[in-house]
Image (cartoon, rainbow, N blue to C red; front, top):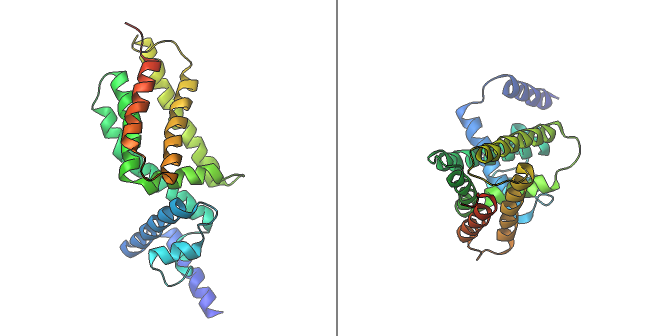
Length: 215
């Protein structure tokens, strides 16, 4: 009984206070291990036992201490991947002024990210392709993803209003771009020899032709 009370107090402290440097490091270690395991064996087979083994933990209890269940860990994985992706791709986009150059930088940047961090993108595609139901965290993330997509769609509209892009449905175009990138990610998980940077350049060329106004 004392052990249970002690654990409860530790969890209460962890939830209400700021995590220590050691706790933050351990959480990051677990998230990194989860990303690798999900990318390698898939979402459904990524058990706490496999993640603990990859992280070098003595038991799955360490994961349960730092995360309130599987959904909590999966949300943290998604958050970490999105944080990395934003920091990697956004600067590449913002150095350009023309909408066409920004679109190309976005597409190629995503596939360059895949080349540098293959497990990160594979993990998030695996998670988003398998999570279903009404998990509040997942619903919130999907809402954020749709909001981000809406921002990208508005950029296409601005390019059309500026006369740089031709006439098309911005929502259809942006979803096609996103689906094409995700498909390369999926292919890369089954074909380690796939040149994802070359695929990125080819997709950028394809969507440049699809969006650019004829001179």
